[in-house]
Image (tube, rainbow, N blue to C red; front, side, top):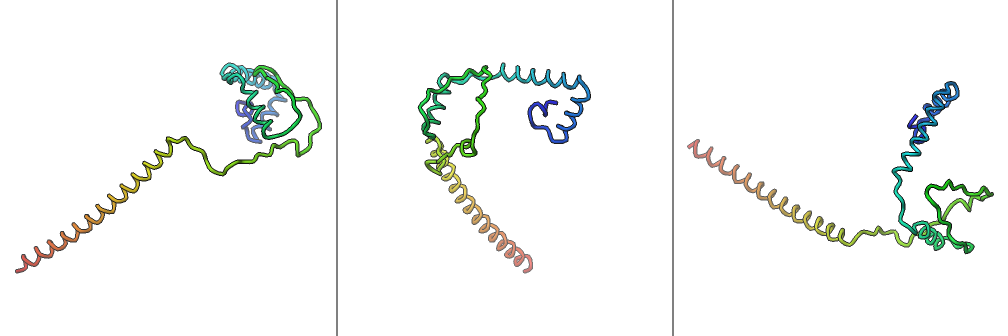
Length: 155
């Protein structure tokens, strides 16, 4: 029932729950109680947004979409707000968003972190190559010493 209330139930689970809801009134009551409990829990754990948030959102929308000058509405999070039903076209349902840049913005301190990681990577690569070559040279010396020992033993 929790997955149904949260809206993540599969089609099979939804069909089964709707059948059980229609057949058994206890399931319907339990489902309503669960919905009320989850709604109460969400209300109790909700974080109040900073004052002026709705005004800032309205300003951003006004900057993107030119329309009639109206004062932004201030909503209380506990209000049961319903928009008036009106005829809308497909074009009215979407907001066109134009990006200024295709680049990602990062805090300036991350630039130093990336630079340090890059430089450390190069240093570790240089050490790896150095130790690889040293190991290869040592292996060749060991082979030469083994051949010298074999020659001395054979004499």
